[in-house]
Image 1 (cartoon, one colour):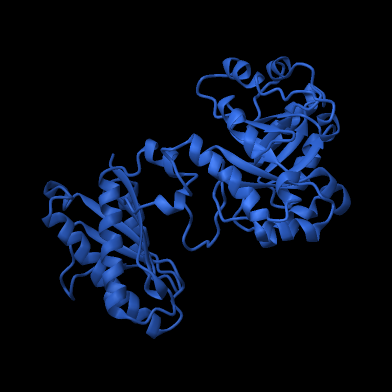
Image 2 (cartoon, rainbow, N blue to C red):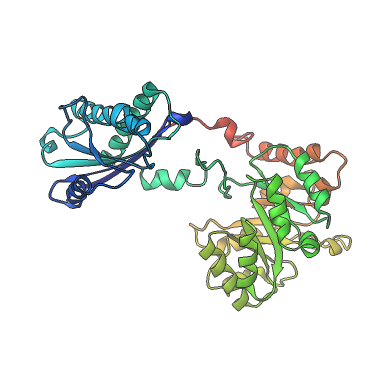
Length: 403
């Protein structure tokens, strides 16, 4: 039984067009929905047959369903005029071009749900955009677009144009994590405002900052950094699910549990982060055997931090970067787990950390206490560029339209 689904967004401004459509047999579920829609009128969302001009519908027949409530005749004219003609003409042209098999013209029907903004004015643009959106949506339905490979590749790269927000994910290491440890919210905001714009930079609401202001500090940082990945460094030891929920409610993208917590607490922590769709991060500071700790967990975290504490840096204790390669041999080959390193990292040692396998460099004082915060951060970004010559600069500068 044919049951095809297509979607497309085309255009800009108030005349922007968004089309969702279904394609299927008259005797199947799409045909049933087609008949019920045509026979069951809904106030403000009256379904109508698509026609190229009065008395000339395309084949397969198409039922057009307005998404936005139509409140008056002025708005109805946009649906029963340029939008209706555009959808019908796009289907007729698709048939002529061989996109829809001719032996299915009297067997299939199409349902197209269309978006017309109440403030749309330009009939030519309404037609233009809805024609293109319908044709693109139909093409995608016929080719089962998108492929799984396309979805997995783009799911963390794309930004929804109408939502107007960017929810970053850690899909393109390495990253520079700025540890905002100074317990002054004003100082943290000043640091953020002076950082360079880079998709390599993520933020950490440090433990001292959170202890002074509570986890609500994350929301305060979010006000000045709406599109940046923000981590709540709670170093959770107990009541794991409760603390994850608190961080989630303050819009944290990731939250940190201490590796010194019990395995039961860490398992609950990871379960709750995955349930809510945020990153679980385990800090191995003072954990004698990180390899053994990971092996005892039911599920792996998203990020592991090999952390040399600030208070022990002066003792000359060396960072445990060498453990990254050993840890990577203990996890599944298809695992996307990232490794972060922290503890006195400078631009001079950044390359060594990356060579050891680090995906995230956690840096605090070198940047946050610098007289030139932007320059200090750029020193690390330059190391990234040097270490990864095939991917210079920010990804947005190299993005191109491929649809």
